[in-house]
Image 1 (cartoon, helix red, strand yellow):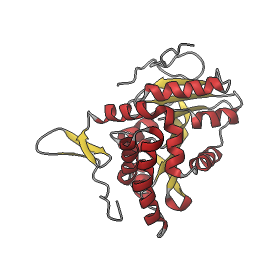
Image 2 (cartoon, helix red, strand yellow):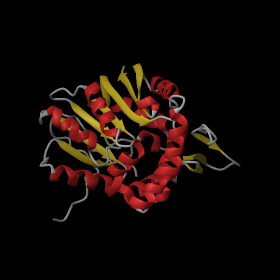
Image 3 (cartoon, helix red, strand yellow):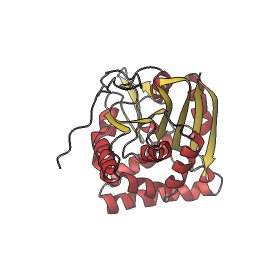
Image 4 (cartoon, helix red, strand yellow):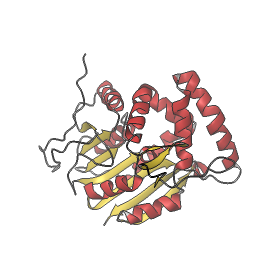
Length: 289
């Protein structure tokens, strides 16, 4: 069966109130996280892409190309990077969210649909889920996975940029993002967009790898990250460089306390976080006020 392209607009039908907007296209011997954006030598804005510095306008295409390449191996990538623990972390994320019947959930950088499918099962068809990802291949992979599971309604699949979402303001009850926000060009813009699309009292939940682990585990995880994961990426997916970027991007992500401050600056209240598996990952929560 020939797959049609995912929609790049959101229908105004139904009760969601969505608009027809179009999305625009270390530690331990390793470098510590740099300032997210700066200007060098009078040039344009530069941002982190792993340990490289690139022009801000280049990063979305670099990220899109990377995930287009690894889409079919993305879930395996998470298994490799977390030693399979991401499945437990995602379950805890959904447990903390407590999806309610009739809710509208937006899952940004939702890729292959792992969070969407879990929420869909909890909602039992009574609600709406919108998955939005920058990579069209990731969206196609997720939609196909949904069809394979017999999910033909209740989830909309969009290609769009998390820093300029094709969604109406105050239209969602919950916003989730699992292992995606560290790949955005400007995280502060992504957080501002999350606050914009959430209704007052709406829930923000972000699951992300953390650059800080408990003493003892930190050194072991560093060795695993920089020696084992890229090697496995080369063997299993034939793409060592993409796996190394993803490891480097974790080191560039702010520690939980600093990310919590960014959430507050974006307008979220009740901000808190839970370290997971000794700090390998963290689950961040906030409320739109």
